Image 1: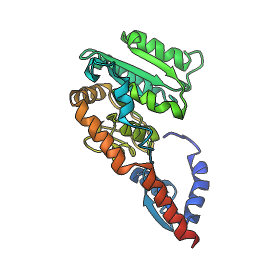
Image 2: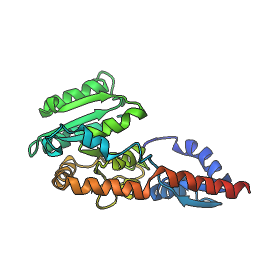
Image 3: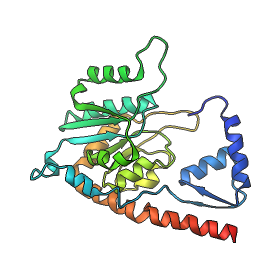
Image 4: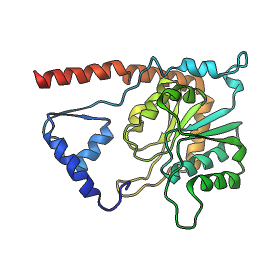
Length: 269
């Protein structure tokens, strides 16, 4: 669905590499499923090892410091973060429509990061103009910040500015953004597709139903996303603590590096 016509030609070199490997690390069970389907099962050893995060750099402490002194986190608006780069129009549209619904019930804001760079039809608004026009039509232009691109060293402070991560991308394999958010104590509201449910689990956020397939991308419904956002916001402290605990227990960088060291040592012995 992401690549369109010609995907078999692009997949073929990856398939040859996979079948030549002595050991394969899959970023998620979803990655294993897709690779088996389109590249074929591995011939050597394999395991699932999710992406990792430096939990000493990405911490909830940055979020606590971002709150106004003496006001408490509850005094801050509910701030949704749409992170990463915006190369898919449906991600931004889903986030804007979700914010419009959430703002009916709560003082809510949305931060949209990265470059808005999806393809548009000839004569249509460019991506940034289309996004701002939709925000104006929905009456939420004053609730949105388009913050642009950011460097990796700026990511902890960016995550600190948010209450939760809104991640409507369909069939996302194993996004670093999600494990970084979890490490900072950000709950994640996401599509129940791809590898993200493996990362977030049941207590570190909330998922919404997905109808996407390998051949078609069907964005999550804004109504379902908004309901999930409001539900998570109602237990924000509990979900935040669960997010941090999950990141430390499952996605810390130190054991991830150690596992690679062990495998390489076995292979070259």
